[in-house]
Image (cartoon, rainbow, N blue to C red; front, top):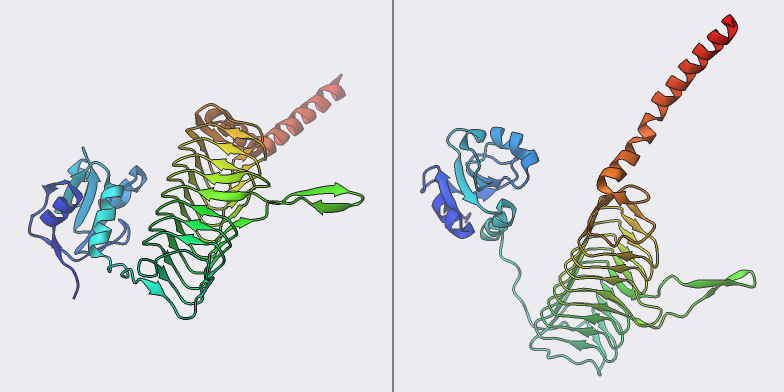
Length: 350
């Protein structure tokens, strides 16, 4: 049976105020501002979608404090909240199907070393999981089918390891760490020394440490340290398809977006944001509260807080100016050609 909630109830759920619309109007679903239909609730989380709000068919809209009702369709319910994007998450939880319950136990097809330490009544280990010698798993942790946990790895409480994740030997996870499918943590760093006409492998004997409340997307790779540790700080969120090299240190509460590559031994401060396809050279330092726009290339350390863009990455306005120059090359070529023609004409007259 589908869920139906009044607009007033939604306002209470999100801690907002119903400033327009009937309190008892029923809402039966949710959708984006462009796709919503009658009977659904949506939200305005970004000013760029304001034109879409004016034409949306949604019955109810979560809007930021101070929103002008004239910018919404006549008769649409409006609920003012401080942060519509965050508030909409509460609405999603209300309408979404409940998450699967935590089911403790070890699936019969799992391969578990006798020296592994965990309480089978307080963890959930799925089909085909491999848990090697010396592993320690905290209470409330779920390991989904096909995951491999290497020797002497330690997992904290309430972690979620999704299907086909590989945690290599001696990886350390804090509490409430989430790792999505296909990610590999703790492979050898990419280290070779060219000698006698060939690439000689350099041993990689360190570890990866991931602190509390980190979430890592699918098909991301984080290399073990050559020695010491590769370290991901508390609360950092890493997207799909990210590569983090050996001995990198990532600070607390950073955001690293997909297809970013961070070369070995780079240190990144707290609250750093990296857009998609950012590239960072090795052995650099990026200070706290640095924002790197998508496709920025970092070739030297950036220690001052602020926004950077371009290749090589420069402070935002300077970087944007440099990015516009290549687009002007055809125009400059035409101007040079015209000047050459004028010069030739003057020389002919002379």
